[in-house]
Amino acid sequence: SALTEGSRSKAASADPTPLSSSFMIGWVPPVSLQRRPPTDELHAFARDSAGVELSLYPRGRMTSGELPWGWYVNEAECTVGCGEEAYARCQSALFALECMQLPWLHTVLDGDVLAISARQFGFVWLLNANKLLRRVDSVPQPVGCSTCSISWGTTRRHVLAGEEELRLQLRHRTGEVVFCIRSF
Image (cartoon, rainbow, N blue to C red):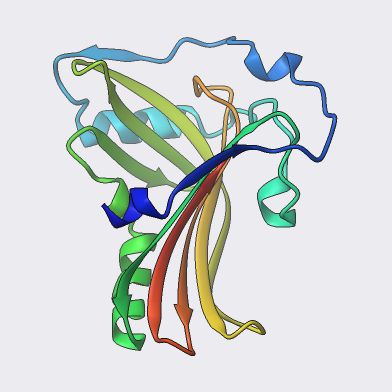
């Protein structure tokens, strides 16, 4: 697929921040076997997770562009359309998190908590909570594109630690609408 063709993964290597605390699991997520948890259960989990702190990870690195040393970084991008009309449709879908409503993944945004239900090993559904960090509506960039994005960080009610950003760009020179995903 176009997404996997444009994807790349790498280990970041700029900062000698210790990693020991990032690998500790201090919380076991709710588990459901054989069935996807209903949306109302996911909303209840989100509300219950509203006051939970962010996980231990180097914060703010997604925004600064200085990815943390020693963390595995995933990046992918693909062209998803062309022109301002396509950009507007994709922006609406991005903020509705339509790209995260899949047979093996279901999400709800409740306040600033992004609750995720993900199927693992084909039959185990895990619930994880994230905190919305930033939402940027369409902003013209000096580099010749308009950009919108949404990003979140994992909370202590998540089996992983790190940040993720979904970004959409309208490249004015070519008219391409490009979807980008980046996480560490």
